[in-house]
Image (tube, rainbow, N blue to C red; front, side, top):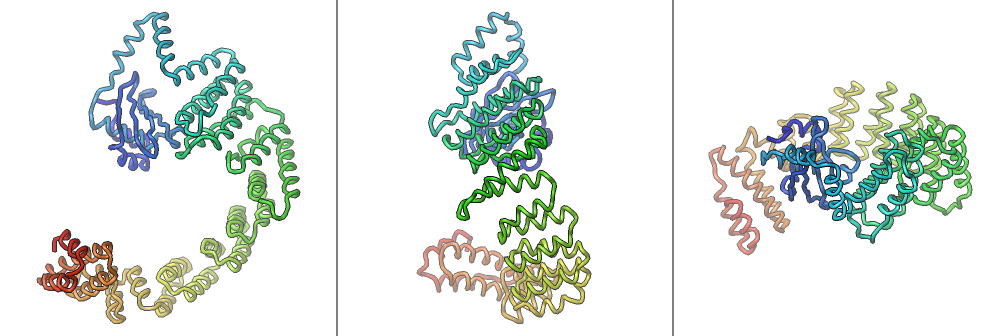
Length: 518
């Protein structure tokens, strides 16, 4: 028996990763036992190496995919676990452990050194560990870091793994209480990773994931071993400015080591650069830095002031409204949302405005806005939005008849179906000669004989469009029609025969009919 169950696998991965992992079972290959688990290769966007084992009697896993590199038990780990469960094989760990413990130190050292000569990854890991043992040898570790993070051409599939080893080693230093020694190494790793991102192929985002971890690790090291706040502020500013698309640095992560002096220095650098920009320059990066500063301060007015520079962009309006709502300033949020809706007609802003009206006990205003939208676009969707808002405002019963009268016939049928009014929906479809697939299928459940004529019309319309996809759709409708005919004691054989005769020169249609069993 393996050391875990399917329930353990689901609990460790979470429902989402567990569900996605089932789709990768067939992609698992090269399943090999290791000392404390199994190792396998899983083919996804790339081929990822996966290890499953046990840690403190719990199921643990590692994967080289972007999600796995960040320490998550991913779908690829799930797939390997499912394959292992299906095989029911015992993982041979006890015998190997017993053998290794039987060796004396000299034999064990020779064995590891011999393997390290053939395995560059093991050699690198051992060198990194050697440099971090006891009093950390920063100079040695920096050389190892430089070697590991050197890019060997654009196609360098091992780069992400080497980068992960480096970050793990520096993290171990911080965990062991050597933050002062780890801090410059983490900073140097970030700088090298930033440069590498433009020079190495990273389609799956694995290198980016390691780089994000490196930035977080540097922030953590700085919080323990405080650097000069002004110098840290300058470094953060120039890294963000010189690499605008990466890294994603949240100034809030560095708020503690920066302190008020560092934040003030960073704010001065950002504002000076902002005011020095030409009108035709790209403001995106500095705008983002200003927004981060305002957000980290917790000052809603400062955030609104910064976001206002980007008006009339929809994003700016949305975020201003969100900031003011979060600050409990609902009346101001409503005024900004009203202004944004009037200027942009954005659906997302409209939703925010309706929500704000309702939160502010202004249900009549929310309903009026929805009514105007329905008159502007007389669709089933707008009807549904009006219904939802009017129900929340407790005025739907007196408004529904008006809303239905506004809709054109085809939209009316759909709206009635959404309301659960299946009989009125069918009667409206018959009255206005607009029986679509949805209402026909609904009626077919209880009145199969009544929908046969409608199915004939739908099939005929489908065939008139031509093309194999339309022919396949027509065959689906024919199957549904045949089922209804059977329940009604009738047959579609005559209708199918007439179709074959009328379309005798359409071999693709005849082929699809044959495939469908007609």
